[in-house]
Length: 43
Image (cartoon, rainbow, N blue to C red):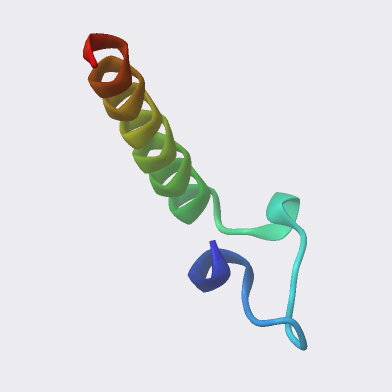
């Protein structure tokens, strides 16, 4: 997320992030969340 939105001094709103970067970030976040959900559901 820091790579996407920048450091504290240069922070920008998520709505101002390049749409391709935001899409990739959201897809990776959803993928990891689903994998963790399935992992913990089994254990």
